[in-house]
Length: 378
Image (cartoon, rainbow, N blue to C red; front, side, top):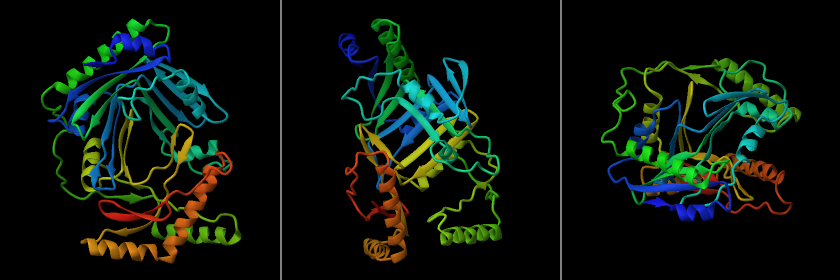
């Protein structure tokens, strides 16, 4: 059954120009991975999953393929692909303005039957994009040639409910010069096409779907030698003593050659390191795979939330060991100092864009347990 029906859809169209239409189907013999393998037939696709507290699956997984718009930026140049047509724009300031401009074209009408995310922008903002927001020197060496910013705008997606084992196939109908009826019919057509793919028995038999057995350990290279890394740490300490900086993360990049499809790496990662934020993003010529315990920043309505993590111990083998390690972690002066510094930084960052007096710490230095480690979180 489709929600809403056309009569209700027409009413909702009076409140905005983007109305989600969805169909619910039973998925008790499927998993997010098997469904993703059925729909992953495009250069651009994504799977977003979550394990709450490292021990139980969160309610929803989000899957998408075949976006309506692709946005990527390299320095000041922004490339937009919409309906197969490519456009380039140049910026001397923040290229995220392009994303804002495109999203401003839509006035979504909320549907209480759907979770908080049912379509929109999915992607990443690279570290070097900080130069668009803060005054910083240019990087000395060129990067790897990956986009600084990459987003897909998805109008159709799949929401996998891990509690009810139901799937919601969503198509966001954009009424943009077209009639309500044609926009609704187009959304229904897209939904039925995706439902047909999901209902096919089995998954596509590609390298992605096969079990991968490792023949030998990969050779991993760093962009630092140990002496150069130690030199960078000593240099950082001098900057701190001089008052130029008060913290720094000397980072390494590791590289290896692989002979396995990226989605197999994601499948292995979700098995050995289930985390609150897991993501697989197929971004054309590159793929991003990751698992993190930490929300960087969340904005809902006009409320901002940060959850900094600093301070880590391995999980114990028993509940008693876990409790002892928690106590030892919370009493470690180095871990406490580092965590409080992050909390202060977070408050400062939020305070720059918030109503004065509205910034508050709602939870300070609590312990959260994950599959292999425990962290101090605020």
